[in-house]
Amino acid sequence: MSGILKPMTTLADVCAEADKIRLSSGNTLGDSIVSDIYANAEQIAHKVISRKAQAKSSWDAKLDDILTSRLLGYPIMLALLGMIFWITIEGANVPSGMIADALFAVQDQLTAWFELAGAPAWLHGVLVLGLYRGLAWVVSVMLPPMAIFFPLFTLLEDLGYLPRVAFNMDNFFKKCKACGKQALTMCMGFGCNAAGIVSCRIIDSPRERLIAMLTNNFVPCNGRFPTLIAIAAIFVGGAFAAGYEPLVAALAITAVVLLGIATTFAVSWTLSHTILKGEPSSLILELPPYRPPQIGAIIYRSIIDRTLFVLKRAVIMAAPAGAITWILGNVYIGDMSIIGHLAGWLQPLGYSIGLDGFILLAFILGLPANEIVVPILLMSYLSTGQMVEFDSLEELRQILLNHGWTWLTAVSAMLFCLLHWPCTTTLLSVYKESGSYKWTFLSFLIPTAIAFAVCFIVAQSARFLGLA
Image (cartoon, rainbow, N blue to C red):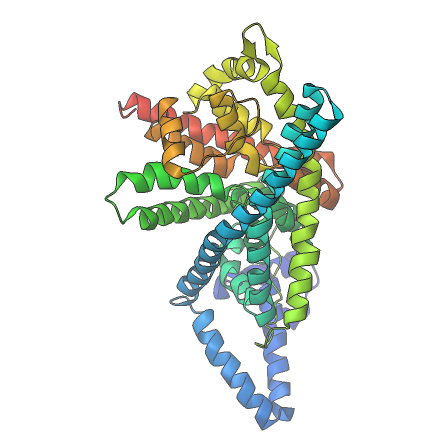
């Protein structure tokens, strides 16, 4: 640090000295300063630290040598996150079905009450088959995964592991001129992108906080996982011999997640070199000691602060969507519903990106909540006038194949599902956190443009090469 502390009279001298440090060590001036401060603090601490604390520090250091090493740190990190995804997906199936059964039993009772009251059919349709049924699907699909994912994620946080994740990812984000803490907000986005946006508060730099908010949508939330899993199981896993379908589908989902992470890095780098130029801030992160989890605090933070908070926003947004969807599916112009007319109008655009008009319309109507995209699509295909769900993957497969789905449709649908615009809950969170319509609009525009561009290139390339 002697080079930093010697007298310098001009800004040019300071910049020149900073460049020397950067070239000699590969670190920024801020990194070098922080590294020197902590090295001196460690020397002072060793003079007064007790043997007991030294032993504990040694144990932490040995564990950190494994969890933050270049050789083992990343595989362990991916394995832990993969295990959380697997537990969330597998564990949510049974409670999701139970909640759906209970909520739809209430729907049947509401229908009986409307009939006893002599309510008109249109009122019953809008309020029960539209608004309430849409809410039932969102709650039954969203609540179980969030109630599993957030406690597991909070457990890793309480154990002291998540700061190690940020440490491991800091180098990648630094190359994008972003902050390593963005890794934590990205992980939170796997549970819910709205929660990921809120968690961006941990990033001190306003510039880097905006980058994290604008890119959080590129990791799939639990609302998009059911769609991705269903398509992967049918069109990817189903193409292999019996017994290998779950493994192949899981690998396909992993590839989709990695593509989302790669897109996060690419867009972060682009933003840092265009509209959000700037140097990355130093990640001043003192790794906390490993500690036993506090179960009460984990339950409170994960269920009250995260799960119920996000679910409330999703319910507020999904309720009107259910009613609007029912109206569009039951109001006819000529011999076709409004949904049919809209899908026909969107057909050329949908075809250009490997989809069809009904799929694209389902994504548009699913803006309030990603969970309702597949029910809306099935309602449109089957002309049922209300949201429906399939009883098995084989039944869904036959429905999709009967409506012209191919491998290209499946790939384009998965890519579009991964990359397309955020749900309204996430957009509302961006506005509340940024306080700006400009950044909220960009958080919608950037993924939308990327989704259309990627799907267009894939679809047109496949057709040009004669593969579809």
